[in-house]
Amino acid sequence: MKIEAVDFFYLAMPEVTTEADGSQDALLVRVAAGGHIGWGECEASPLTSIAAFVCPMSHGVCRPVSASVLGQTLEEPEDIARIAAAVEYDSMDLLQAAHTFSGVEMALWDLLGKARGEPVWRLLGYAASHPKTPYASVLFGDTPQETLERARAARARGFSAGKFGWGPIGRGSAKDDADHFHAAREGLGPDGVLLVDVGQIFGEDVEAAAARLPDLEAAKALWLEEPFQASALEAYGALARRSGRVKLAGGEGAHNVHMARHLIDYGGVGFIQIDCGRIGGIGPAKKVADYAVGKGVTFVNHTFTSHLALSASLQPYAGLADHRICEFPAAPKPLAIEMTATHLEPDASGQVAAPDAPGLGIEIDPAAIRKYLVDVEITVQGKTLYETPPLDQPSHPTAPHGSAG
Image 1 (tube, rainbow, N blue to C red):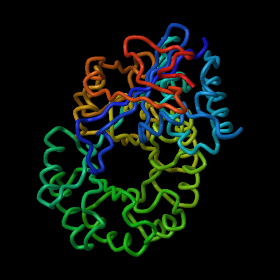
Image 2 (cartoon, helix red, strand yellow):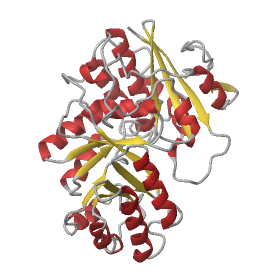
Image 3 (cartoon, rainbow, N blue to C red):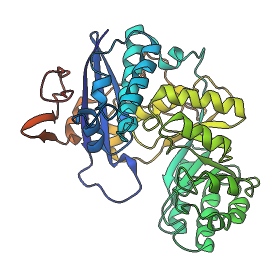
């Protein structure tokens, strides 16, 4: 098979706000090869990701992602790795390349799985897809009472674990934050698993983060996620040495395997969270999962958007029976739910698993795509490099839309 076309669809809610909710818009990727179609999703700014695929070459190692993808052979998993290496080298000075290729790479796995009639996790070498315990991933409320209500709602929906993120945490006093931690604990109940995500709010201020540890301990939180900027390894390491029972979690900001490994080796995280829509796709995430196993660190998926992204995020550790925690977007915007016709709902025991269906096992809903589709055109010196492609059929590389370059 030859990669014939790569098309992007920019979807957005009618209003996008400053709320730390990545499900307000989406960049859906469609790849065509050998009569098959694969779908993926980028977890990044949609317009800049499209631009990275179609932009004119700046120099030899600042080429558009399209130059390393279109026309390439796709027959084996090794072909995906080969294409990824070409993107990494030829677009090394195009810093958006990793995010753009992440969605393309997902779609390549989806397409290859469909062509072979195999789920992606089996193509990765796993013999089985083990069930995971999903945690409801929601934002902290503006008040402790709102946090309490969100925790109760998550528990009422059958979630035994809940992660509360961002919101007002770190913007006021440690006492203010403690009220939210304890409200979340009360809402989840004494046996619920409490996870806390502070969205890099402390920058690299170890003392500010450490001031929250006693109340996190008292609330019996399992982890403190992303206290610092993604590359602040010294700060991570310093806090990890002081964190006691509350382990550090991070890794969603890693846009290559090396960043994730360094967070394990030098940052001292107990949980490594990888977003397939950022790190370069499913293949790099699988490398991190393998590395985490060898280091005694728990691999966790990171996703906050659609069930297409959720399925992709499960694949790299589907076969790891002892790595059971799973992020599950519990309150995404309607766009993120409606864009797929297939959803991964928890089973009767409250568990979720990567699908057994070929590819990623997720079907797209064309009607929903049309509902949220944002028309886009990128033109340079009178030449159209990109325009929103037709949804009913893949574009052709020589056409002026979608995969033109």
